[in-house]
Structure formats: C-alpha cells, structure tokens
Length: 136
Image (cartoon, rainbow, N blue to C red):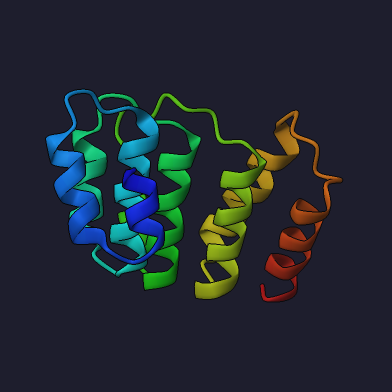
C-alpha cells in the first residue's frame, strides 16, 4: 500500500499508512525513503534511513542517489555499513562521480570495482564506467 501511494505522489498518505503499520518491512521503509529523496527531503530520508532496523542495497543506493543529485557526496558516509556494494550501488557512485566531478571518489570506485567479483561487462555498468571516465 505504501508503495502505491508513494508512486502516485501522495507521500503524506503513504507516511500516514507507514506510521499505522503494525509491522514494517524493508520494502515499506525503502518506499518512504525513496519518496522523501524524490521530493528532495534528504534530511527526512536520512532520519528514516537511520531509524531502519534492517537496511539493504536498495536503502543505500537510494540515499547515495539522493546525495549525488544534491551534489552532497560528503554526506555519503554510513557507519556500520554491513551491505556489500553490488553493481547497482557502484553504478550510482559512478553516476555521482560524473555529476559532481569528485576525483577521489572516482579513484575509490575504480579501485573497488577492479578488486571485486562483480560482472563489469553488464551494459549498465559499462555505460556508467564510460561516462564516469569520460568526465574525469
């Protein structure tokens, strides 16, 4: 239900339903965080992110994307991060590097990708790598 309200643009109703839920799962948390990020409320999204009992790759990726679009990569610091970044998180980071021209982050991404076992031949990964390196 939360995802449905969020997708039609009624974040207030989605938040109300979320607050009334007896049990919340990671998908419902992610839906609210995504809605807040989409509206540009990164403080609210980060507050919800910090309250989440369990985070997944989608949670981290949504926050990274929000900070990248706001040009605030300095805020992409997650204490106790226990999620191994997958190619989708790395594509978001590559996109962030392209958008804000952060050379330090670009070098870290290159280093991480070269040491990882992720399949960098996937079209979305290749496109992000090309874009990031073209703007370096």
